[in-house]
Structure formats: C-alpha cells, structure tokens
Image 1 (cartoon, one colour):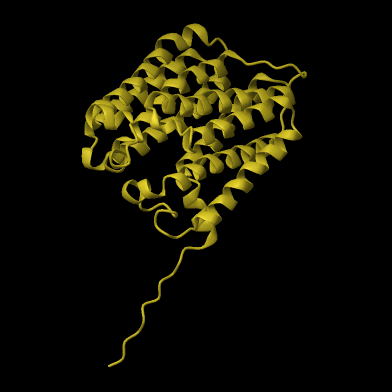
Image 2 (spheres, helix red, strand yellow):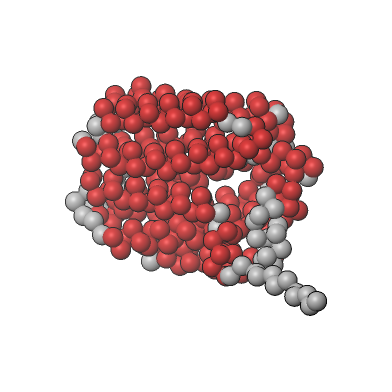
Length: 304
C-alpha cells in the first residue's frame, strides 16, 4: 500500500496581492473615485475617463501602502485577530510586503508630481497619516480617538476633497471649486468613517487587549463600542435626511431623503440582527452602505 505526499499549493502572486490590499478598502477607494467623477461630470463642463483612471491608480497605491504598513506592524496581533491575512498566515514575507508597500507608495507620488500641487498634497497627507497610524514610535492606533480621526480624515478629506479638487481643476476653467454635494458628502463621510474605525475593532478584542492596543472596544467593551459606532452612523444619516434637502441645492432633495431613509432602515435592521459572535459580517454590511453612499449622492446630483 503506497502513500502519496500531500501537495500544498501556495497562493499565487495575484491572490496574495489582492488579500494584502484588504479588498473592501480598495473597493471603497474605487467607488469613491467613480462617484466623485460622476458628480464632477454633472457639475463641470469637461470630462475625461483617463483622469478617472489615473485617480483610481493613485488612490489604489495609497490604499495598498497604508493597509500594507498596518499589516507589517501588526503581524503578531493579526495572528490572533485576522489569521487569514497573508503575513499573519505565513504566505507572504515581511521583505516582500515592504517591497509592495514601497512601490505602492511611490506610484501615486510620481503620478501626483505630474498632476499639480493639490493632488500631491492629498497623496502625501494620506500616506503620512497612514504611516503615523501604524509605525512606531508615533503609532497613533494606540489612541482610539486619534486613530479614528486619522481614518476619518483620510477617507473624508483627502479622498473626497482631494479627488474632486483634481477633477475640478482638470474639467473646469482652472479654478478650484467644491460644490455643495461634495461638501455634504465629506460631512457625511466624517462620522461614517469614524464609525468604521470603531466597528472594525469590535471583533478584534482578544488580540488588541493582549497587545495593549487601547481601542474603543478594549476601553468600553464590545457592546458599548458597537453602540458608539452605530450611533455615529445613525447621526450621519439623520443629518443628511434633515439637512440635505435644505443645504445641498445641486442635488435632488427627494432622492436624498428617500435614499438615506432606506439606507438608515437597512442599518437599523442589520444592527438588530447582528450576531455578536460573527460581528465581522455586520461590519462588512456597513461597508456596503459606504459604497452605496457615493452612488446615491451621484444619482441625486444627476437627478437635479
């Protein structure tokens, strides 16, 4: 009777890079860029899909660099909290990860140098905040409020205002203009990104507590941290439902109210059914609502 040696197939390079990029965050960057592009085309006289392509490439590079540094510095924590990630699983070496991060950071900087001061400032600011969030000795992720504000600042300000500002200069008359819809989107994404920053740590209590990362979940407990994050989401939706039709005069008020009311109803329903033992599933549904926000705002602008 012969025995056959088990063959262990290691994941391919493309699969590793996809897992390393944290796909939901990468999709968030792509969808943000696409939504802002649609708003820009509706608001401004020019257009150009090539501009959208390069903004997506730059955004993807910044995204991979930021999440990559976080994984490199959190390998031991991720072996407890997220053992499926390539570094934590032993599928990717630290050296290879650093090379990916270096290339991912260099590409958007080089692209930004050809696009003007605004995009360069947005790229450098996002990379700097991402590095300060993860790297010692600063390692801002140790401080829950500051860590949450880092994520909110990048997602709301660097992404929304930076990307739209680039489109404004490229498609307009050369002057920087930010329409009410983009200001409203930025104001909405601030508390929404704060909520994402809080909720992402709820399933990670064990590893964060063991390595003394004082997240809101570690300080408040999983239940109260989840309530804090969900409360921020509810406030964001309520603000858009009440103030959106009054202040955002370049978007259709009915679309704003109806769309955000439906999204809020989904959020409440999902929160009530959230399984504490599988909170990550609810967290990913929150990301789906994040994706939907850019489509909703773009639709409201087109409807106007």
